[in-house]
Image 1 (cartoon, rainbow, N blue to C red):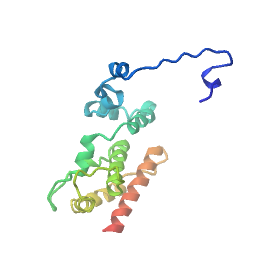
Image 2 (spheres, rainbow, N blue to C red; image 1 turned 30 degrees about the vertical axis):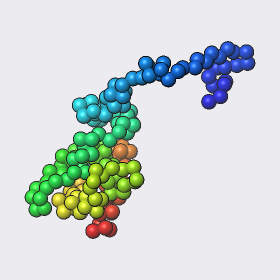
Image 3 (tube, one colour; image 1 turned 60 degrees about the vertical axis):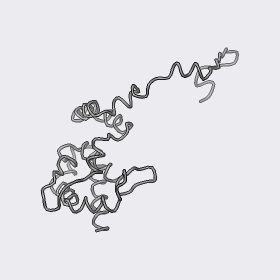
Image 4 (cartoon, rainbow, N blue to C red; image 1 turned 45 degrees about the horizontal axis):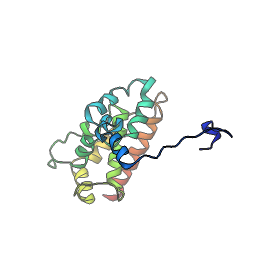
Length: 179
C-alpha cells in the first residue's frame, strides 16, 4: 500500500487515534456472529451448496465455500467411518457424484486425511487405521465406480470437473499404490 494508492498527497492531513485495550474490548464482536462462522454452520453452508447448480453464481459461491472452514458435519462423517466389512456402506452420502461440487468438496477432505499436515486433526484416529477402514468399507471401489460411471471429459463441463477428475485420480492412485 502506498500513500498515493490511498489518495494521500503532499499536504494531506492524517488523523490517528490511539485506542486503549479497554476501548478495544468494548468493541469486540462475538466470534459467533462473524460472517465466516455463521456461513460455516450446517444450515447456511448447505444453502450455499444449493446455489451451485446455477451457473450464474456457481463460481462465486464455490470461491466463498473455499474461504470457509471445513464444515464439521461432513469432515466428521468422512473421518469417523463406521461400518462392518461386507455390509453395504452408503458411500453415495459421503462421496456424492451427482454433484461435481459436492464430490470435489468431499474429495478435498479425503485428500487431507490421506496426506495430513501437522495442523490437520484426526481426533485420535490413526491415519493408517483410517486408510484401512476406508478401503475395507469399499471407499476405493466406490471411487473407481465414480470414475467409470461419470463423464468428466464432456466438453460442456467446466474447470471444476477437471479439478474433480484430477483429485479423484490422485486419490485412487494413492490407494492403489499403498494397498
